[in-house]
Image 1 (spheres, rainbow, N blue to C red):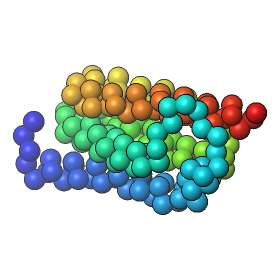
Image 2 (image 1 turned 120 degrees about the vertical axis):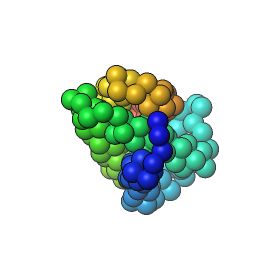
Image 3 (image 1 turned 90 degrees about the vertical axis):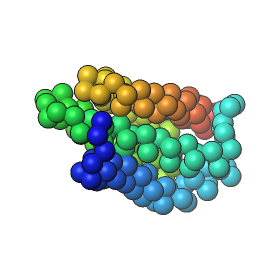
Length: 161
């Protein structure tokens, strides 16, 4: 893929958008993260708090790179659908943070996360049809959201006990 000025702008736009959504969510949920870190019962394998911003920064970058790659391909119905799914899953990603950390709605946030995972999978499958490397870049995201599902479910079950 040729990297002309227009391509760089698309990469900057998509990576910047994804990172901005993540940064806004992170800023908004700070009180909930502090409460979660200090008070929530967590399942085994819960990573230390410092891991989350590092992982999410990388995942948002990969999301943005994948979307930019798809956006630079020939305009098609599949490409437009893939980019709509990208935006929708990003919105669901943002919403999950608020539901889990601010509302502490662990059961509902687990259901929300399940829908998010399905959206990510659908987006990835559409990415694959448009640009296979863009799809492969989403694999860490798919796996991390599965792990997040385990953590969310564990917190939900432990908070009910």
